[in-house]
Image (tube, rainbow, N blue to C red; front, side, top):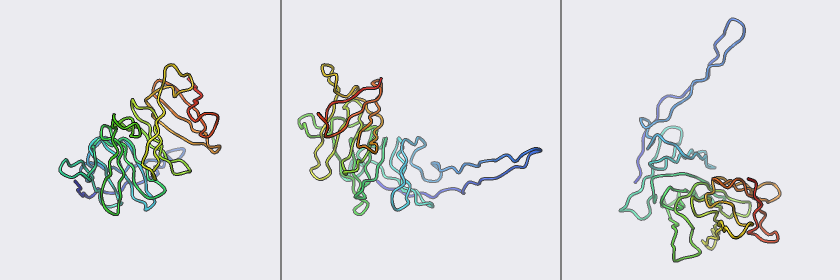
Length: 220
């Protein structure tokens, strides 16, 4: 489902002159449900290369062009709609797709040319599928691979060309495995090293192409 709403007045930045020195007064501009936002809990924010703002809420995905808000909602009668209204993470890839991580609907790829959402779900019978439908964070590396942090399924690497997932999960018997299966943040530094933030397992570091791609260094 898609709906459009308009927004309210713009905010201002003012200066109030005091007895000794000026005091800056900041007026925050508000974008609310009255202006067309689908829901008041905003989990993720993205500005795409066209300048549009995207907001992930607990009840839908929103695109804002500076004047109007367009909302994208799950529609059980439309297989190409958003898979789940709880949007937790948003990313624009180098190829221009908008990727959406949801609370219970897996990973979505939005093609703005067709207006369609393609879904990637966890399939327990397919080891190359994503390991969890609860997506907490998204990151694209310099090679174009998509890295997905999940709740309960660890870290996933997605190859957009083959549409296959490789997972990195905690193995209590392997001290070099990722320290937690709940991955909340991902970053690749200038040396190519990945830093993985987890819930309850501290920080992990690993470098693809090293002695073992699955060897993680833990910082608890």
